[in-house]
Length: 299
Image (cartoon, rainbow, N blue to C red; front, side):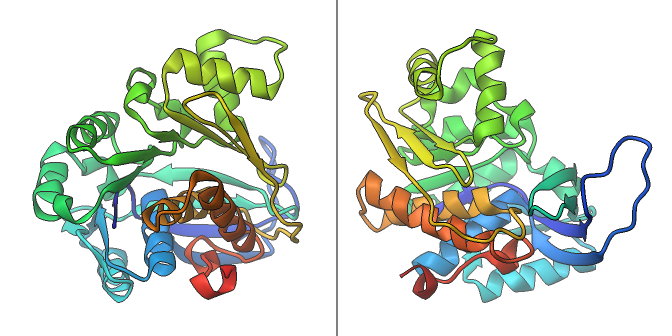
């Protein structure tokens, strides 16, 4: 089975013609509220696609949003979420006509998740899962603690370096799968090597070798997904052509689906293809968790 350590947010999503420029005011064509957060999106993806019990280390507030979220997790057979005396995390998401998004995060209870919560989670649920998903929407020291604890416990670690600025570069050698998107990889690469003229495949191999990441997966949206494995062999999977209306949570759906594929003993190629199909379906719908497909749709 699969465990997740990460964030739970309520997403406030507003649609606009184009991204708002500095100093500009524009009207939104719609306003919607959804359950979100990278950790929660991945947990619900895993629950829907595995049709099994999923274990999620996350904090929500004692406000009405937190109460509603706990009920939602129970309905999805997700265990481990705790209520904390704080506000539930929030995400403010601007979506343009092309279906691209920009996101501002308010951490809330997510910022209070610490090593004590991680220890309690692993002590209670650690024997029930072998694959673990992580992201960057909880404190950096908690991410560091989680990676070390999961590695010590022998878990397969899938790490999504988003938001990219919070990525723990010195711990990447302990990660089994690092899964940045195109923008995130460009940031991480430049941080280590600076600007150069190498093509994306050369950059991916150089980064994987220098940072000693076991497997590097680059999510390039509508272009392709590329994986460089521990032997520097490259596999690419092209997504099907779809009409994108909202890319929110597409990366989370990919990661959750990839974890499910591995948990079902798929080889890496088949798990990549499974995850690409899931993510491609998700961008055809609005919202984070409402866009997560069912297993039957992928099949």
